[in-house]
Amino acid sequence: MPATEISSVAVNPGISPGLHIWGWEVAAYLFLGGLVAGLMVLSGVMHRRREPPPESFALWGPLLAPVLLGAGMFALFLDLEHKLHFWRFYASFQIASPMSWGSWILLLVFPASLLLAVVSLIECGGGAARQPESSWVAAPVSGAQRYLRERLDKEVADFLRAQRGHLALANIVLGVALGIYTGILLGALGARPLWNSPVLGPLFLLSGLSSAAALLALLEPSAEARHRLGSLDLRLIAGEAAALVLMLIGLASGGAAQRAAAHLFFGGAYTALFWIGIAFTGLLLPAVIEFLHRRGRAQATVYPAVLVLLGGFALRVIILFAGQASRWEYL
Amino acid sequence: MARYGMAIDLRTCTGCTACVVSCKVENQVDGGLSRDRVTQRVTGRFPSLTLEIFSERCNQCADAPCVWNCPTGASHYNVGGIVMIDEAKCTGCKACIAACPYDARFINQRGYAEKCTFCLHRVKEGLEPACVATCPSLAMVFGDLEDPESDISRSLASRRHRALLPEAGTRPNHFYLE
Image 1 (cartoon, rainbow over the protein chains, first blue to last red):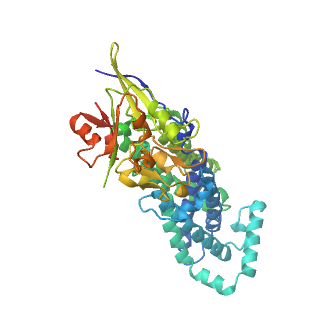
Image 2 (image 1 turned 180 degrees about the horizontal axis):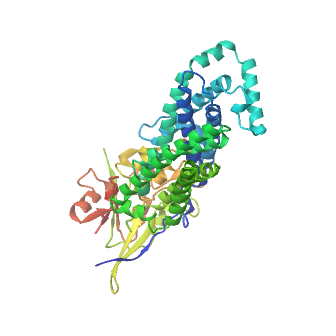
Image 3 (image 1 turned 135 degrees about the vertical axis):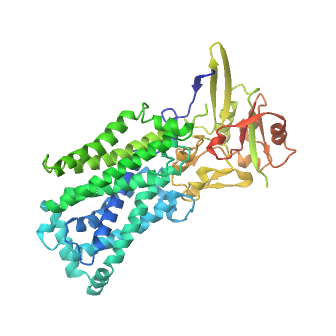
């Protein structure tokens, strides 16, 4: 049986720095983009109700979405190797390129989430009970509310109020698009077999929703609302775990390149990171703590939410880096 | 319509890397970087070993993932199916690098994606690419795959040949004569 004894390959970013692809900037964007997608969908669902939702997170979701998205897009900008040409994304639309779709989706996400934020500021949260206790976040928010209520043209305010349902729907649709497209983008890069899974998009969307529910639970002063967000997160974690299992089954039952990619998590270089960072810290541990709390065996703590957020970030970092380590072997 | 291709004779290539050096000089490639490379593979079990030497570069794929993954249209098909990069449109987003199964692309010092162009500037003047013109063992053949009388078509018709990674589905136009 002939076996490959030696292959000399000068093709890796360690030897040729020009081959470096994506680092922490893109991982940060993937996490923040997923979080924003989750916030948009959750707050969109809240605002589809006839009456303005009383929960604090109906205000915090739309408020945080554009801020976090701005931070994420700045990270993307940092990743560009020729930053002066960033506007080129908006000088063309390439129908076959998921990245081109993504840049236009991002452009639509900003006004939709900003407008919902303005509506939420006008409509939601009159009392202190609807805001987190810490005054350093509450002060600028109530300041912005006062400013909008006093200065915003009444006709504009009425129009925005009337459009709340439509804005909410736009946030849901764009949030789903934002949550899924990054997974499709990585999946379309056929040279990196680990990413070539149709489940990657839904996985990223579920992870984004889960992270968003966790972030809102951290900011939510009402114990009852926190409890509901916790239940939601438990279901989303289950969905995320199922998507992850499907992705691994897909890779393990694929061709040689896909199987080699799956091996990265089953004995390969990313095994410990994957099982400790994603499976244990991000999924199992928060689910168990939340479950025990539900059964009255554990105190309500911030740990499940913090772990879910850490796990969401770990998922993007590990999938992004392991994907770049997976390749078609031909030497 | 021409469709340019390249073939390298595995029997006569000695792995001298003259192709790499001539390309670097011809195209003024930045320090530490190169558009082509020579890799080796030894297969078998000692003492019955086989050494193969590959002079590698962009495969100028007919179904190039770098082209359709490019978000700005910077990566495009030029004359004869040669994949080119319009630097004025390139943002350095690196989607093309991640899309290429041959790792043929890199970011140059000015922040643009760069790769082999089959020396299109020379081809337009009727010259061969620098690597082909330089190869001291005459192992490299370049020409129009659509023209049955061209050197490359004759070589491919008369010799057993293969491309790297046809299973990646990119329809490469860069071959090795066995």
